[in-house]
Length: 86
Image (cartoon, rainbow, N blue to C red; front, side):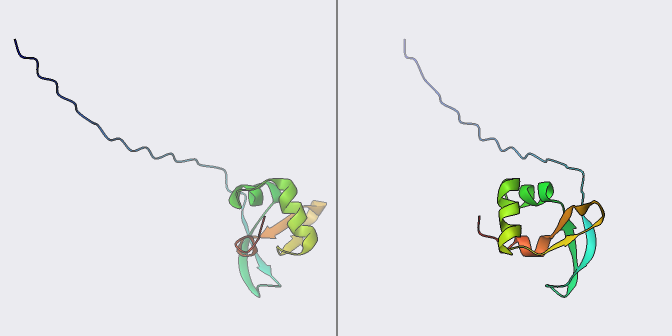
């Protein structure tokens, strides 16, 4: 008796969509000289794929544009996040 073996491959793709509450505001950035989105340090770290400590280091070295709003929370220009080196 002859035995026939058959192999089948199934390819699958997965897409994960992670929705987060947007904490973005629109403000005028003096360094960019245009209206931009600004976010807090936690959201900036998420956008830049880094941690909050690195964001504060970038704030200290002037790599990102910031604006201090009420409550002394630094708001970070999203446009300036594109150029950071962490």
